[in-house]
Image (cartoon, rainbow, N blue to C red; front, side):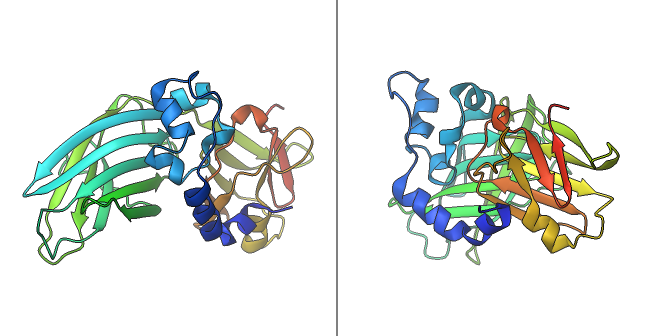
Length: 278
């Protein structure tokens, strides 16, 4: 059975398959138009995330159409849609360089600021992943993923996406919007077989952060290899995850096949399996 680390190694192939095959959906006439769009591979998010495993209820709580645009010195930046929760946000945007420019290339510096301005004094977060594709109109369709090690983002608060092109004479542009839709993050106390707490986990349909202070001698690589979400039958759910080891005992990861939380029975890492319902 493929675990999360195996999926990390196969990630380029997974993304290629998603881009070529797209994501299927249910009855195209039964869903909200926004949800129908991303479930039928018409929106930027669906070219990167396999959203088939999420119900329309879950999507409606974490997906938002933004549609905010700003112009600066010939640059046009538009944030089109977002999906995520308090510790991860997938942000789709289009980036149009000045017409006739031969020095203003694809997006280079991208950051997400918690506030209504890129100059609010907050430190902007850099994306863990940035996908950029030419759109045939001289611009780029992009998807930036911002992953935090804790629940940082709050619904109802402003966010600002700042983007700078890669040319030597490039200009910056920023778009601000209010993030109203964010999915739920579940906190889990990781325990051993005797009920002793050995760590914590933050879990959502899109991401998982694990912090351990008792590894029982298991190496960081083996711990990372072992991470899995189990269903009630003890089978690993196919989340297609990519994990990063921030330290010897902290792991931060995202799912490219988001998971319905009702399907998750337990979090497994190293020698520990902790039920979400105990």
